[in-house]
Image (cartoon, rainbow, N blue to C red; front, side, top):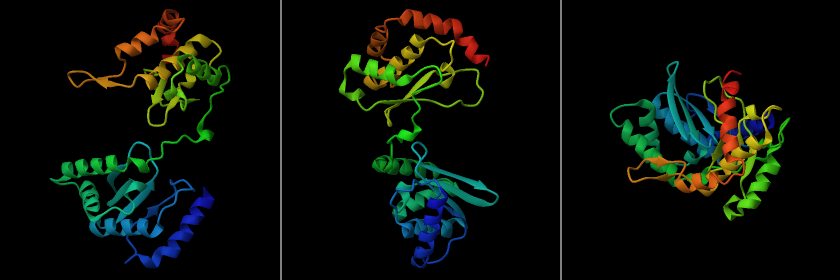
Length: 261
């Protein structure tokens, strides 16, 4: 990370004379991956354009997967976090960013415009999974063979790129979600609470199977425009898990043990 930051400091110094005037506020590029190729002068110009209209801006350029734009006021300054897709954007987009940060009667129109901008530039979002992020082999259960087993049995082309990892412990909660499927990254995450000796392997395998079905049967909207995550076809396939009833019963009987931890 230090090497990356040193590079950006050097690049900023090299490009400083290409920006009309030094903007008031900080420019943070530390969240960008080292191999991302961006025009530093364009980044600085974006910072200058925003700062000129908002009386000072602390700008963070990100490579986020979910939140592309955020703006808040802190200690009398504007703090904007923008995905790098906004680097090199036009005047109309800058106007919308300024309106979002400053607030006012047109803020809803600005949000709508920026959402459309994001939708039109989704190709700039990097959904690829870094292999270093993946931790499939836990202390007691290895998710890799479970994924391979069911990917082979289901034998569907769209499952070829699905990867799996143990997730992370979150903050305290009175609920627990044993698994999740990230459609953009084709990534299954399994809650690390299941990586315990007393949790039977068949139940962990059921969670892997359940999340893999999400890749085959994505959510749909019903006639009332309600989002249906578990469709009839999904439920039909879920019941094909060899120890389906046993898995449901085990979850029902042992759920309090997870919530009491």
